[in-house]
Image (cartoon, rainbow, N blue to C red; front, side, top):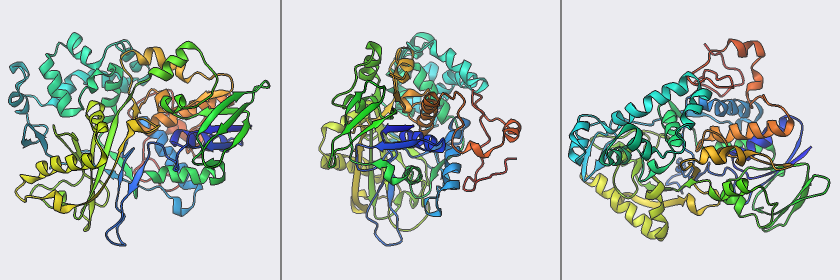
Amino acid sequence: MHVAIVGGGISGLYSALILRREGHQVTVYESSDRIGGRIYTHRFQPNSKNEDIFFEAGAMRIPRSSLHSQVYDLVRYLNTHNTAEDKVELIPYILEHENNMTYIHNEKKDIDDITWGAKLGIPKAYHGKSAKQLLGEVVRPWLELLREDFDSGFEEILKYDEFSFRAYLRAIVGWPHEVIEFVELMVSQTNQYELSFTEIIMQNLDFDTKDWVTIRNGMSRLAMSAANLVGRRQIHLNSPVKRIVELPDGKIRLFTSGPVERSGEFDKVILAIPPAALHNIQERPKWSFMKEQSIRGIHYEPLYKIGLHFRTRFWEQSSRPSFGGQSTTDLRFRWIVYPSNDIGKPGSGVLLLYSWMTDASRWNSLAREERIRLALFDLNKFFGNDENEVNVYEQYIEAFDVSWSCESAMGDAMFLPGQFSRFHDISKKPEGNIHFAGEHLSRHHTWIAGALDSALTTVGDILGEKELRPLGREFISAAKERSLQKTDIPSRYFAYAIPHHLNVQYVKIA
């Protein structure tokens, strides 16, 4: 069988690898000049030959949770079959560091300081607790339900899918508006609580994870390693699909535009692209009313990231140094992310400024030079009142930014109230020999794990195998599979203990 895969993101690459493992031929069409989709490591010009200066303009971290076990299985698979040059090595990602400061209303304190609420004027009944504590009281019972049995817990959460998280906090929990605004400001982004209750609970499940990892030398190594194993001849870059034609015999013909126009006839097609990119295909079959509505309506939250390259890693050299982690602010960029790679090393470094939802949308109307100017201005305000005062203008070298709303990949899928209930099943339903994959079609939005889970399900549907093994799990015998200790999130798939070293084929799990 010859399968065309439209989209060279991780979902498309994973689909290609599974199909090749099962003995099928694949051709991947990617509209841009790179593979990886929202996995995107941007590299700056180094100050010296010994430097590798980069930041993650897209995906940047992976929780060590069994919900993400397929990502770790994929790393095992890639490192088993690829060359040493393509090795994917995991290193710790520091989500929080004890010295990370929060900057709100021109004041710096720890985010867990319980005096924030009183200072910002929330009702007295809610004083004496941090925003994290207040949020935890609401979400903790739901997280425990999911950990007890993910599938049944998810069904319970869907009973409130028609609620936004804000509406749930108002109508069910009874929080005043001021408390909602306080918690959203401190631990989220502007208007994110207008998203569905389902999404915010799932997001809190992921971030309620202690240990995290990233990839040495950049997350893009995961996509590059996968692409090299698929085979570069099977991947066509700069090849946006402009026409999809269903032939009388059931086969599908694709036509691409770009520098080189291509066409091909295939037994099956996987559209591993987000709805916005699907909408951009000039000519394609018309599907059912609700399928078309889902393509129009599925909500992707805006994401904005800017990496600022500085002469030194001055944030690690202050009186209260940050070695990884992140700072929350009410400044325009909202979050400062301190890199987890090359911690403590001399030379230059990059700070990542990160915002999403309404905070991200506001950047889109500005020219790039103005975005950089405002980012430096606010960053200088944050660092300028330290004991060891830093002038970020003197430290600044260059910047690179991505507003994902302006890319064909958009941001990441975060459904509005009711969209799980009305769009999720119809969106992933195949249309004849045309199939669909992507993180928006999983129950686990915004994460690499969701993209892999969707791809596995889609390829299983194509091959008629409901329990298709994920990549990397074929190295575990059936007897070993039964004996392995399950971890934190039970589901229909076995979830394995995640070892701290995944750079060899076989790993002893205690």
